Image 1 (cartoon, rainbow, N blue to C red):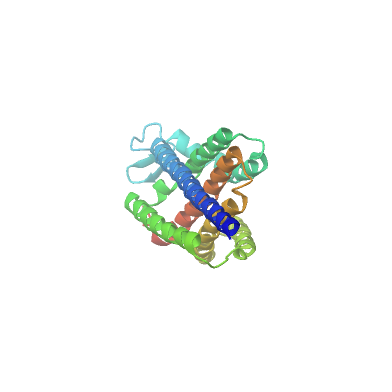
Image 2: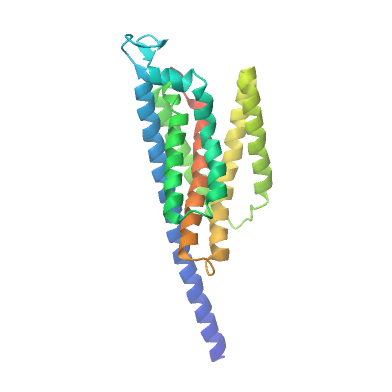
Amino acid sequence: MAEYQTAHVASGARAADIDVGLRAHMNKVYGTMSIGLLITALASWAISGLAVTSDPVGATAMLSEGKYLTGLGEALYMSPLKWVVMFAPLGMVFAFGAAVNRLSAAGAQLFFYAFATLMGISISSIFLVFTGYSIVQTFLITAISFAGLSLWGYTTKKDISAWGSFLIMGVIGLLVASLVNIFLGSPAIQFAISLLGVLIFAGLTAYDTQKIKTDYIAHAQSMDGEWLAKSAIMGALNLYLDFINLFMFLLHFLGNRE
């Protein structure tokens, strides 16, 4: 009886340690993700400011009354360089997945922040297309929605791991449809893509949050500190991508165009 009580206390102590470690792990995930979002926002705003001028002297194109593209703006948004800027973040995601096991935790974190900067440059055109007020409004709506979805994914007792394969297939379908619509330019297809995008990345937010939690619980006893640190960065990257994509798709519905 005494041995059973001792084992029960030890088991309870381990569970408490895992619970404390999980909270610290999730705090690191959300903290790293938040820094990445801040870097993206600052990079996007700074680049858009450099790309537009109110002085027609030396400008290469007029955007609207009193707004002109600078040389940098023309290179980013009107030359073949725009394709490089557009698809470079996607290439970095694949590169990160391939290199994460060889990188140190500090190297992985630096890679993530570099990716966040490049993503900011890639989406900087939103400041040229949408009003600043609607961008801020959509960001706040996205943040509230993301928080609710992530909280549900963390607290739910329902196993949603089966969602993963369907959601990934949905992301691939969205990517293909978006590439096709670049050439078609169909508003109806864009509306359908945006609607499905919101639903898919809402699901991925809950799914990725639960996966981060379950992966930590499953491997907490066997993983060393370095692996845990890299796992937190990888989790931050997944949630960061969910947030950015949810924001961009919502912006197509809620954003007021210049």
